Image (cartoon, rainbow, N blue to C red; front, top):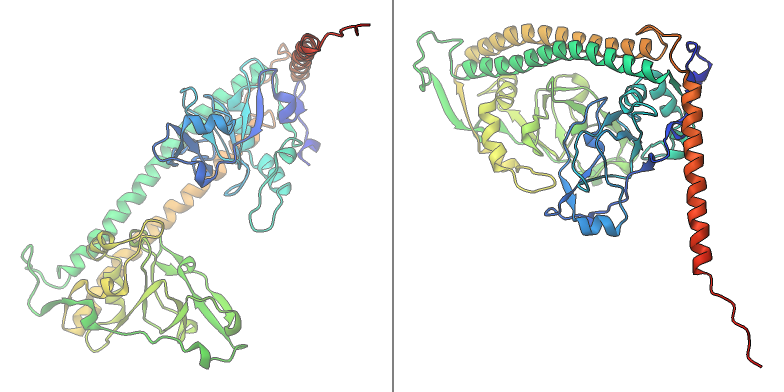
Length: 472
């Protein structure tokens, strides 16, 4: 337990309920089902996707009417409410609610709402504390559930936070904000560089498939001599479907599905192993070394990879892929793979997607796309070599950026660690101790409770029927 860690003089350990002022709130969001929602409603439903690590991400787009929200007795969000995610990923992440618009926002049940006051505990302090790695580990240790792990509000309520005096909370929050601002500028530069690399990679592919790597005098909008444009189906072979009934039920096989592809690298990173008697229904296609696996769902995500390991040869792929297999007499597999991740190939397919929940294209849509290529196989090899030479440099830069981003997150946690150990800003012995602050919050809550009991008692007395004597 983190309470065993030492804290500075004047600090105290406190749970969220102990920090809540007399008019504060510590509740779960509301149980709002699909039938309660209305896309034309005026009340927005804030969801887990909106909750970042210290930042409100503003992603959700679900609504309900004010009438329905009132009927469900929803808790409307206030500006500077602390929102804590009770489910991954990661569990316990917290942010401040930024909007100041009355009766316009509610939140989902798996988000806890903590409403504080500037005279009790600073909301931003609690938000930063919740995102501290030590608190996050406490939250993770108290989560429960099998298929969907979450932390209950009762378990969240027993976690103790290191609490400094109120003036020191202000100093800590100001210092963290200053350091995070500098850090965020660095991260912004790194992410901008990542985006530029994506643009560069697509430029490389564009040059390659216009013939500019192997032909010096290519005119804009024209292909070099010896190049051809045809539909993909004319340079590919069909994948064979599995005959499940002919398989030994206890025989094992490797299964590749969309979840096993890293779409930032366009590589297969994981696979699954099944026996045929418990095989997923999508295990339908026999794949071979050199095949390109092209996800037909949400094509813009580019879940695309080449089968580049011998262990996957003659194994099984999901029907969620179009298996693009090169006719090697016409096209080498790597040329085909790089063409499949080229925006010039992807964009038309994005326009052909149908469906709302799972927008997808058909195999026929993929195989009907045009591909331009040199008919000379050695030239195809030369183009692939040029692509890989340039992309390998890009990948090394990408790795360096990823390393720097990882270091940035480690530095962020280092700042939070120092803050909640009392090492980020100096202590002032003249500050009122946090224990006195907690006692005052407790006294105010008790006073409010007593006043409420008195009001309830008077109501009962007023509503009690008077006794009437019986007539003789």
